Structure formats: structure tokens, C-alpha cells
Amino acid sequence: MSLLVDFTNLSIGHGGFGINTNILETNVINLAVVIGVVVTFVGDALKSLLENRRQAILNNLKEADQKAFEAQERLNQAKAALSEAMKKAEQIKQQSVVTAEQESQQVVRQTQEELTRLEQTKQDTIQLQRQRAIQQLSQQVITLALSQVKNKLAGSRKDTAFHNSVNQFHIVLLTNYKA
Image (tube, rainbow, N blue to C red; front, side):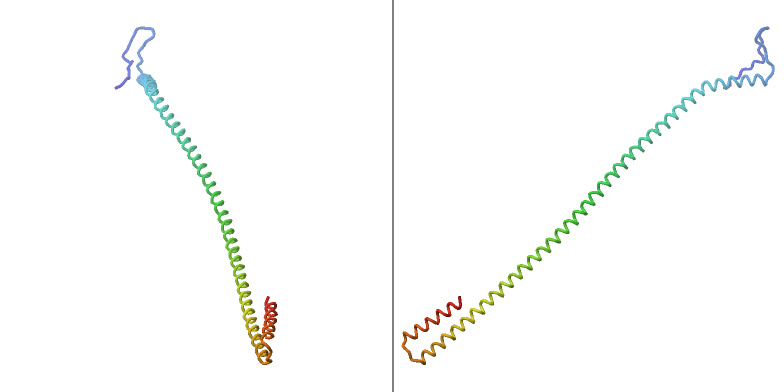
């Protein structure tokens, strides 16, 4: 559909409206009118389309900025969580070192106590064996002494009262010696 108006065949009296017979000028005028109409109608649609596109771009930029901000917040939170985890790991490591040291000291202390107990048991056993040996030796000495006294008394032919008093005297001496 063409909006071209051909004013070449138009004629109105004397005054103001005349006929332009120049085709080039009439085409330029027609073209200017068409461009004006196109700019008026299409320009508004183009402006509306460009404004919508501009708003869409601005909205996309805002959304991208918001997502970038949220991503930065999540990154900061993750960094903070990592930092906390590293601190906790360091604390656990330090606690394990302290616990290992305490366990080591406890084992050393228990071993030392066991060695002391064993040494004491050894000394007690040695002392007990020494006392038994002394007691056995004393018993043998007493038995030997009594038998020698009986032999002497039997050979000397003294009366029994004298023999008993001598035996009692030696028993008292040996008892005192033993104590």
C-alpha cells in the first residue's frame, strides 16, 4: 500500500496551491511524508521495543549483580567455615598431642611403679630367704650344741639334776642369742 500522493495533476486557482510538474521534487516530498509517517508510527514502536530491551538488559544486570553478591556471600561463608574447620582441626591436633604425652607419661609412671614393686618384692623375698637360712642354721647349731652337751654330760656321769640345770642354762643362752 502506497501513501504516495501525486500533486502534479492538481490545480487550484491562483494563490497558494499550485501544480508542481517536477517529478523529482514531488517524489522527494512524497518520500519525506512517508518517512515522517514511518518515523511517527514505527518510531513509537521502535522506541517501545528499545525501551523494553533496555529494561530487560537492566533487569538481567540487576539479577547478575544480585547473583554475584549472593555468590560472594556464600564464598565468604565458605571461607569462614573453612577457617573454623581449620581451627578445630588444629585444636584436635593439639589435644591429641597432649593426650598422647599424658598417656606416655602414665605408661612410664606405671612401669616405674611396677619396677619399684618388683624390686620391693625381690628385696622381701631375699630377706625372707635370709631369715629362713639363719633360722635353719640356728636350729642346726642348737641341735648340735645340745647333742654335744648331752654327750659330755653322759660321759661325765653327773647326776640328772645337774644335767638338767646345765641343759636349761644352755637353752636360755641359745634362746637369748636367737632373739
